[in-house]
Image (tube, rainbow, N blue to C red; front, side, top):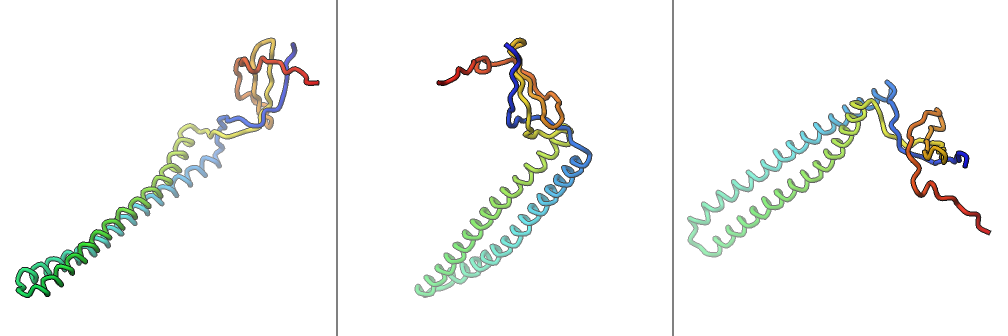
Length: 173
């Protein structure tokens, strides 16, 4: 049986990066690193602001507790206790807001870290994995299949024919 050639739509292959592509990778990596730093600074600033709000509520709780302990009238004690409960609720809400903000920013940071890692990997390897159009040639005599890039003719992969590759398609009447 002779060799059979057919078009194979696309396969993943490593492609050597051009200097221009390497520069683009480094720019994307640096932009992502700057975005990570900005997000980390945003978290610190947000937490600082929220801690100041908490300190204000804690101060209110402290002065209200002192008034409560020195007060003899029950109705005023109840009013003071409710003021403390309100301040504690506000502190709890601020803590929830901080956690939600941190979660949101950490997800943002994770996306930028993925960009950094992807581009770092490309620059370290000097290659990128891409889908390219290839011509698949099956050599039944040699029992191998060869993938060659359509655009350059470069052979990018050679493998033994699998059992599926060796099956002959019968014509249907």
